[in-house]
Length: 446
Image 1 (cartoon, one colour):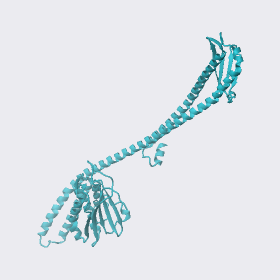
Image 2: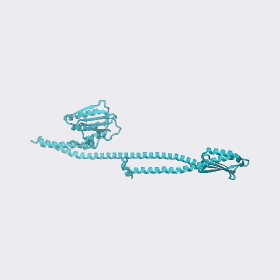
Image 3: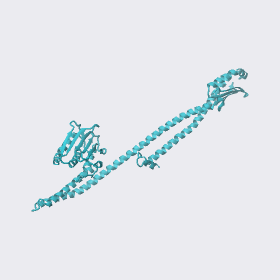
Image 4: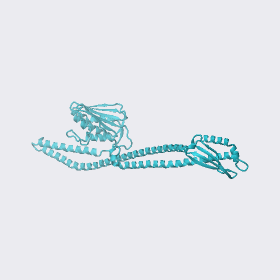
């Protein structure tokens, strides 16, 4: 039942059935233990109350016996004739005594022959209730002279027991509530540890897959590069030989050779991009001016943009604070994004690179174009490796750009509208802790 329960509750991680089962069993045991302790303690409370009341009755009987002995003490013992003469005073004193003691139901004084000489019942009505007797013997000079019997009302005992039960019940409920809260907190903490351990396990597996992918990619790249280099060299030699043959200069054969060389170059670029994505270099952080890196990158691309008849403009915040970043990686990310913009923006279009300080202490770089925009159903996929709708594209440029930004603890956001253009927004933290090299996944916003 626990696994089904776990699957129905989305907040319980997969495989948490054993944890839920343990929680339920422990909660049942705790509840049973609390109520067993409560039930057992009630019997102890009742026995303790009875014992206390009997002790109180015995003590009260002793006080009355002392008063009777003092009232009728004679040369050789208790003079019961004298007590009979003072009986009204004794009865008055006993009634007053019972009025002040609500738990006393009745008092009876007997002589040495067990003949009652004084009987008084409580004016509070305790005499009609069930009572517990307590008896003390009148002793004078070591000789028994009579008895004093006292009846303790069970109503008072029941009230005391009820009061003690309420107090005990409240304490048990409080302890049980605290125990339940601690149990729930412990259960939630266990769930937190389970999620954390699974996240760490996923991160470890992802790292292992990335390392394996890098090793396999390096091996494949090495095996592919060597024959490509040989093919490229042979094609160059063949082109030179054809150039020297009369009638073949600049002919169809030469164009075919150059087309083959272009394809070989494209495959080499694809291999280089794949290796860059599969085995990203650890960033080397240095405190530099991000504006200088943006200016250098734009200057490097100006010729390509002019050739495509696309205007590349800079809008940099003059007082932009310094940033701790790896210039080579950030420039590569910018080159990939700007390269995509150059290919999609038609002639006469504009691309603007802006920098500013963010409200959260980070720095922001925005790359805005007035190109055709990205369809909404493609926004979530543009950062996927090998996803490309452009002819000749490798589909790795944006994936590499996001990876390099994330290596800096930042993220890339993209906003786009069809026929109105696209904005890529890079958010970078200004500083990094020692040893920082991996960061959260980027976010695509619309």
